[in-house]
Length: 114
Image 1 (tube, rainbow, N blue to C red):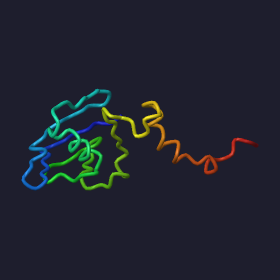
Image 2 (image 1 turned 180 degrees about the vertical axis):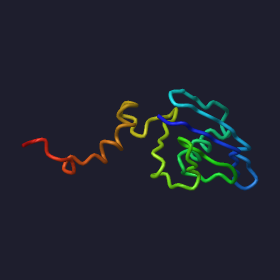
Image 3 (image 1 turned 135 degrees about the vertical axis):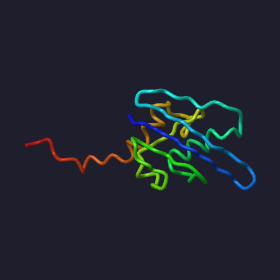
Image 4 (image 1 turned 45 degrees about the vertical axis):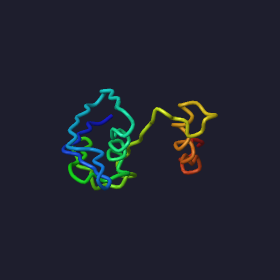
């Protein structure tokens, strides 16, 4: 787990202010749910945390390190949505596990045989 700190996060798309001066601290082990009406900025906030969107203002911190300008792959962050079904025929677990299974390459692991 990690410490997540959002400080002064703002994000606009043209004239639409999706996020305005958001401050949030989520400590290790805490569980947080974002709720709100359609267009409230929930997805935009998650995309900013994951690095898929850059905030117009403010900083994203993970474990005391500012990661605002890091690429998504450098953050080790993922998102899960209410409508989880990337593949509707799969369970929630299988949808979340799919990219992990797809990237696992057993031939790169050292052999356990002597």
